[in-house]
Image 1 (tube, rainbow, N blue to C red):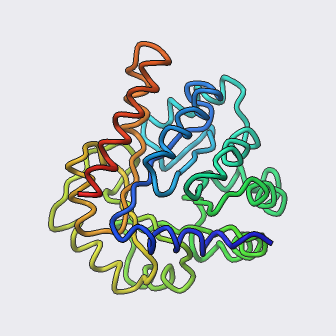
Image 2: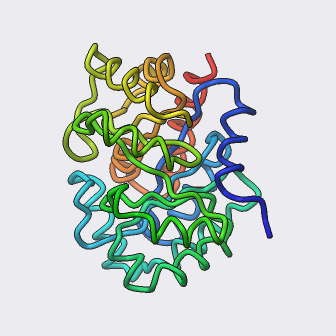
Image 3: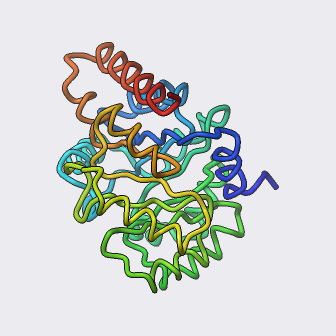
Length: 264
């Protein structure tokens, strides 16, 4: 059996010795081939890739990612297509798939997670699956070597933080703001306090996301956390590009800039 995803993720943090860059790619946006290309480009700069499965009712996502997901769905992208992109990235950094519970149960947790594992996926994020309801999916995931990556937010109280800490694998995705992706993130005392509170209960690395847009913000987050997720800003830059070549160049330049900021 291949090395468990949780160990692959943990090794990525240990090996880097600095904050990790975790860019997000929406599978199928603006089309399937382009998203595969963008994932390959970002893999040159990333420490972990977050690969999104488009979903019709993405409650954790803001308008930018929602629109990208809808375009991917309209183009015919399906979960197995996204998992095959993960398979194409086997020679790069670990891949974590972000999806929703309905997608998992629609295919059956065992089938979905087996397919994910077969494509080399190291972890899965299911934002609408609470930690106290995740035991069954976690057991299946662990059985095939896929880490179930938990989320924590400013609204997560200490008791829930402690519960997350007991079962956390690989890393915990710490949501920087109350709300959905793509909003404005501010590195202030509230965010610092959230990270400090999470560290009291959670022993695996903490990766902060939601609202990070610039290399300077990434560097600032890297000062207090173990990694940075950037999603909506990457999608915005792809959408603003006048053609496919310009989009590829924008992804390359942005990935290089963020990686450089986190290595400084």
